[in-house]
Structures are given as C-alpha cells and as structure tokens.
Image 1 (cartoon, rainbow, N blue to C red):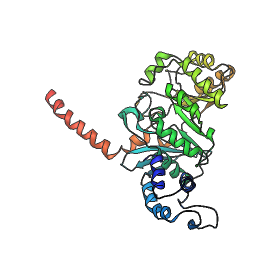
Image 2: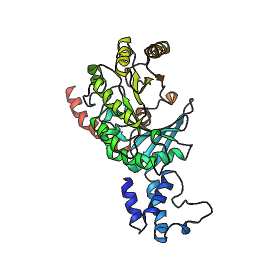
Image 3: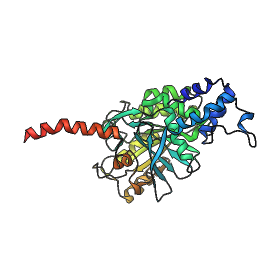
Image 4: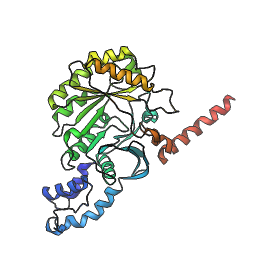
Length: 357
C-alpha cells in the first residue's frame, strides 16, 4: 500500500486537506488515527464520514506489518523479524540512542557477496506504507527519533516508495530531516533526485573499497561508478545539505583491511565533508568472510585518524543474535511463498540428480 493511496482513501470520504493531514500525522507518529488536541473528542475536529471510515482504515494499516519475532541484543538493540501482509518477512532493528533501521526491499538485486539479503535476489519492493508500518512497530516499543533506510534492500532501486516514506516521516512523522538516512551503494539517480526533494535526508554511501575492480567484485551488480567519481558526487550533496556523508566500509579480513586501502580512503576523503564508518563484518557460517581481529581494527582506525579522516567503528547492532543483512530472515526461514518456490525448484532438479547417478 502506497502512502498516496492512503491519502486518497481519506479524501474519498469528503475530508479536507486539514483532516487528511491530521490523520496521516497521527498514523506516522504511532497514535490512534482519531488523535487530536488534548481534551477534544474526535467529533470536534473530524467530519462524521471520515470518523466512520477510520476503524476500517486502521485495520488495513495494522495488517501491513506485524512483528513475528523479537531478538534483544546485549548492546541495547533489538532485531525485529517483521511479517508483511503477504507473508513475506523483512528485518527492522531498534538501535541504541532512539534509532531504527528499516528495510526497503524483500531481497536485493545488488548481490553484495558478503551479505545474506541478496542471496535469493530481489523478490519484491516494500511499499512506502510498509516502510512507515515498520516505524510504527518500532515506535510501539520505544522512542524512535532517527530512521535509517539501511536494512534489507537497495533504496535507490525503490526510489519512489522510499522518498514517499521519507517525506511523510520528515513532515507529519516529526523526525528531523538529518535524522532520516538514505543508504545506497551509489546510483546516479540518487544524486539527481535527492537534491530536488523537500525533505533532504542524510546520505550514507556503501564504499567498501577504493579500488574499482575490488568494489565490482564485492558489489557485482552495483552501478559501475568509479569510487573517486562517487565521492565527488556525494560531496556535492553534502555541501548542498550542509551535512556530512557517511561512508560505510564493511571490514573483511584479508580483503579490504590493508594499509593500501586505508591510504586510498585518505586520498579520496581528504578535505571532504565526510565520516568514515568502519563496520567489522558480522561473521556467518553461510559465508567464508571473516572479521579482522580487534587489534587490526584498532590499528586501522588510528591510522585513518592520523591521516586526518574522521573515523568511527560501528559494530553491527545485535551481533550476538546473528541478525543483520538478512541473517535473521534466513535463519528463521523465509516466507511461505519463497519456501514453496524453493521446494518446486528442488523437485525440478531432483530427477536430473538421480539420472546422473
């Protein structure tokens, strides 16, 4: 369900802009749809036809998403496996310090080799309504003042839905524009669209290597933008919005944790309005990558600091519950639809395997 379709259903009752805006604001803030001024009943500010339609609409909105399971982490985070209306699942993460990470796609077409999300490819887009529904679920559990579009999926591949959700959250939802973070591997469309938006979110770029060849190996279906060009495009947006770009770098032992790569970071980000986030890899048995030792991570962080690069180390939230990048979804089983598809594929393969013997 798109946010715009929700608005149109409200207008269909004869409601005016002020009434629709009030209902959308209540929903985006996780309040009852007929919430209004204190000590004022709904009949004082909402027309009868609209009030009569709200219970049915509330049922539709509640059906967009529900929490199938919750996995608190020792770091204060909590990973949510969220089931959408059609049975598909996505991951949301309640972060320390009032943050929430949400998913924008079921699966992903980029196919990052160190990420579980893209192993099944792109299954479908998450609608703008489903994105806001993830925020509502988060707000039902704790305060949410920052939303990061950094869960499952590549936001630039679902641009209209993502920007629609960002616009609602940054206006009616009461979240500061710079507390809405659009995370991307880099796509020319991002740098065309975001500067034109009323709500201009902060931008995070998944860099992972300063070498174009290695980056192409790690992100096989990301747009082929040279890292130097990508940084220049991002820098223009940073100067337009007066907010630094967050560069994401998943540290993979023996792959992108060399001093040569750190020198590449220092060269690309010198004088740029940027923050480098080093993210130690969240090791999983399904993939062969490993995280570097703590001593190596500390060494690299200090090296970048010495080069004048503002650097932080961000451990993936909830690592003790094996969540993130599709791990929780994979561990608990995908949707009934995907499981059915896999079984059908296995049946097609089985006769061939038998004949080979």
